[in-house]
Amino acid sequence: MQDEDTMNKNIVKFRTSVESAWQHLADVHLEGRRSLKNKPIVLVFTKCDLFLYLEKEMTFGEHVSKKVQRYGFDEISDIEKIDEEKLKHGKNLVKKCFGDVIKFLDARSHNCSVIYTSSFWLVNDSNN
Image (cartoon, rainbow, N blue to C red; front, side):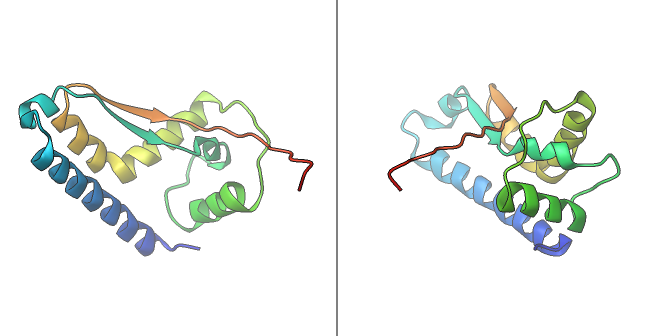
């Protein structure tokens, strides 16, 4: 289980990794930086079904970490439609944590999109 300090360190590590990867891409891109700015970028946040388990007052921290562990790894949640309020709250939490990354990528492309997604399927292989 991650505490808030560890989560913040992981967010900083993620942001630094994205910035380093972008710098490397810009250095080796054959058409140059200007052309790179015209390329589309899509940042995808997965497992957004976990927004179902957020309460309005939750922020990223111990409570959210427990919910992510339980419903993201320990058990499969029932598929439900995420109501607009929980979707909005979940997106706001993601933007709060990863807003710097979103702004960084948005500043480097004229066509930057953020997608929130989730998908589940159960594979039942009778051979095992």
